[in-house]
Image (cartoon, rainbow, N blue to C red):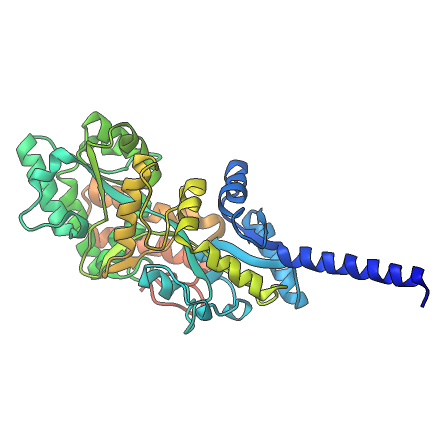
Length: 422
């Protein structure tokens, strides 16, 4: 072999080695989360830059995300190394298309989340990654009226009602605040909090006797609720004005109150009912498709995402809260610290009973929400008979489930085909 041939061969080998190293160094992180330009950039610069192997972070809308993933799975090979998505995205997949992750020896601090991440199998099909949720908040002036023996971090609905009644009696004004306005997220309360706490379901149990009890309890709470709540959409405004002393809302819709007057308010978990502490987590996870090109690098990235310091960096970048036990640093905004603590206590509680975001409804999501808001308006605002209203609304809910074919989601028991309204 000539010297020139040897040089060409050596150069080719060097190029191949470099190309191989580059391919191994960069893990393609294919995500439906942190899509806005600012969040995506923060993910790259503040969260993923510390991963030694290098990460190509590519967020996408759900459609393109799924299309490319399905194409690689069908081809039997691909370039996607790690998937980032909501629980609903993963639950719609075949678990066989995801790599079992038990061997990593890592999980979230919530047994409830870890069970969800098994997707009905015996092992973790994704690792819970980050969460957002809805919580309770109160003016500290209200704390003196807590019922005797009540723990604000482990309230029951009966204790919440008694607390609201005590405040009402002491101040002469109904001081519970609820986001029942046109842009309020009241439907999420019924779907993710009230129904799971009293019926251990949301679709199957919509018109059950337990649901009647749930609405009776909420109607009782409403007697101590500021009647102007039908105009309230962001409860931070009512906390700041004093129109409400005890409220429920999404963490982002309480932030202004905690950031402006952090010493005046306290955040705490949602209350529990007979079937657990219902709450609605917006739960995202990380998974590895079976077609990942470098399994070791993909697993290393998943493990990196779960480190406490990475979880805190993710919180700063996305405003999604950690799912592992962390000590939040002092330089976080007050709202983040307060809400993060409440979310962690809620999701980590022994009686946690998550009511997941509706899945599989397509463009019928608004109609689904309307079933619950219509029930609220008829039962609570118009004072109609609860059983009559639920039996009537049941037909509308059944039609939506049949038309969409959406299977049940937690806490309803799984279904073959459309989730039944029993």
